[in-house]
Image 1 (cartoon, helix red, strand yellow):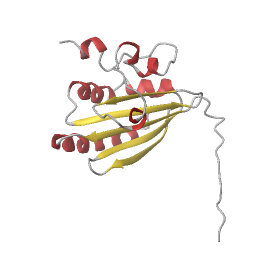
Image 2 (cartoon, one colour):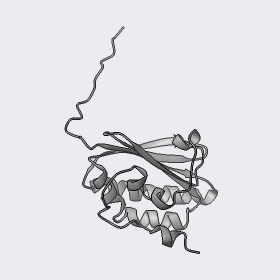
Image 3 (cartoon, one colour):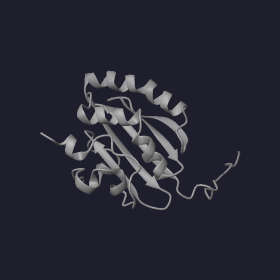
Image 4 (cartoon, one colour):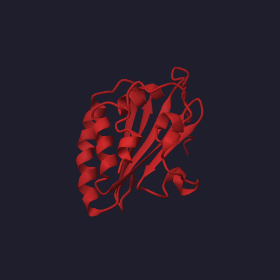
Length: 168
């Protein structure tokens, strides 16, 4: 018998660490194409080593329906937010919010200093939304910074403004 080689980590060099889990689930046949064409684009963006991204790991959440995702570790929320509001992510997000392409998207963000935030777009009953009440992501719940209760202003504008998204 071999005893477990238990290890832990010293995170003192990462006082503002943020971990984000993301997933895209295929909701229709069209969603297969949407999901699989995004994969190479995400890999290319990750290989460019965005400032603040410490680690990116691909995850398969489910096979039927296809549900792919990732876990990312970021130095701090500002780095994550800056990347999310720049190209190519900004364009991906804008396109998705206008037309899901037959998919659903979600993310859950966890902060080393405490707190979390999440969004579930066309994917009910996943993660936190499987047991906690949901509400529309409008007003102060529209953006991750305010959902997480973080102060300050974003360095960049959102990919799409709430008013533009919900304009009739």
